[in-house]
Length: 269
Image 1 (cartoon, helix red, strand yellow):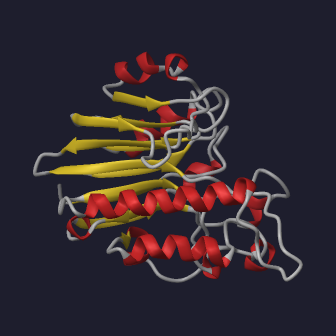
Image 2 (cartoon, helix red, strand yellow):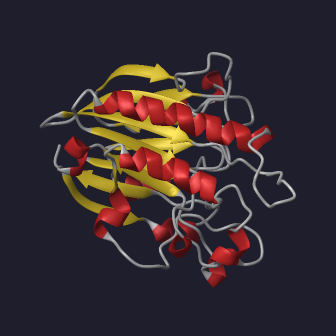
């Protein structure tokens, strides 16, 4: 099972690039982030005609997640548990029925968290957008813990808006006060890992200069001034099935690209 995550930064803007990448890469399942579309406006027919099953959790103009699958999907749910008042479309789950076994897939778009306000001491204040980010991550931790109790393959895939370590940024010094790299953000990410999840990319690839996002500004792509913020976390049962992982960097150099590129794994499922 080839499973990918891809922040497309707007389905309308990527209406040609996404189908082109799908045909070239041939994944079995893709989680999409930032579709920036309500469910009714998503170009479902385009992808269904290509052979994809389509499940969306959309929101007008902002956020929005989706799952495209060539394999059967069951038990699709939308929204991260823990806050019924949260209307932001950032989480979708489904069970993917592979040839050998089923995999519970969670597609997520974790809040950015900027701007951050700081105390005079330099400590970040957990309020506003940054407070929402940390609260959302606490809810995700609870959901990740519950999924582990199922004792089955689980994949948490998406745009985490977290730079896990300094080596995951070309210029880590410019991110010191950013919500993506603050110690509190990284600690929340590690708490999820420490539940028993494996970060797929780092399980197989070590070292710096591996990125999944390059800003459109200041020649970031040409200078390889990137960051790695798109991750796939695997339950122990899924980690045992991991065969390969790759950041599809070439997609950033295509026509009308997203500022993110796909990251994919292959599971023996």
